[in-house]
Amino acid sequence: MTESEQLESLRTMIELAERIVVFTGAGISTESGIPDFRGPQGVWKSKPPIDFRDFVASEEVRRKSWELRFSDAYKLTGAKPNAGHNAITKLVKDGKVTHVITQNVDGLHQASGTPDELVIELHGNTNYSKCLDCEKRFENEDIKKKFLKNGTIPYCDGCGGIVKTATISFGQQMPVEEMQRAEQAALACDLFIVIGSSLVVYPAAGFPQVAKQNGARLIVINNEPTDLDILCDLVLHQQIGPTLSAVVNL
Ligand SMILES: [Zn+2]
Image (tube, rainbow, N blue to C red; front, side, top):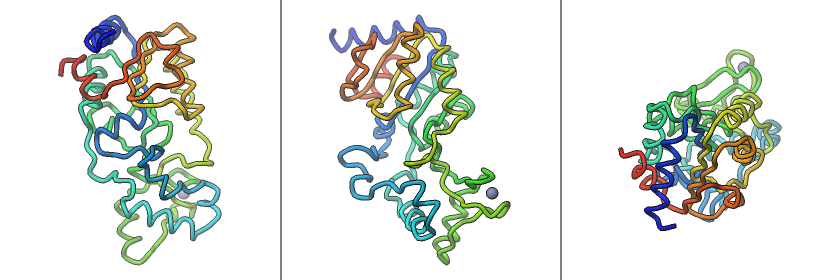
């Protein structure tokens, strides 16, 4: 298939579908300048991620973690949604996309206008923090101010629990509710589109298989091959923003 035939095929499958689930990974956000933590240039190569158990066990580790967070090593500050996020939001507003399942923690789907309740964040969100015991929400700006001023490490003012960014760390249990919602969405869709994920992180990467086994069509748009390409009805190894923009006619 030529590139234009692939685009035509993608457009047709989206037109025919009634309940699309989009599944996004780091590849969509690299086009907004956010590096893939896991990639060859990723921050995790030079600064390995902190394990959840170490974070909970040691105040020193927590101090290091907040230092790293506020040094902006992750280059999350100021990132804006790109053409890929905007195209997905258009499909949401057209009533085509029922849910966006994402491995990203940057909140860019919501920033582009996809309603928060339709975004299922499998790895949490880095833009705010939560108490690990009572789940009370804390804003990172407030934590940052106190941390930079006198090195204060945050504890919950409600229950005294440890406060951590609302992301799912290595060694931390996957969020039960989000996993269930994602599975239900995958089972209910008639088209599942994987965008910018190499599908190597399980259990999240199982959702496309669940959808396909339940009769949905499966599309992968990613800049490199994935293990599931063989299962797909269509595979595009293309840039995400330009591909989706061309198809949804923004
Ligand atoms: Zn608390």
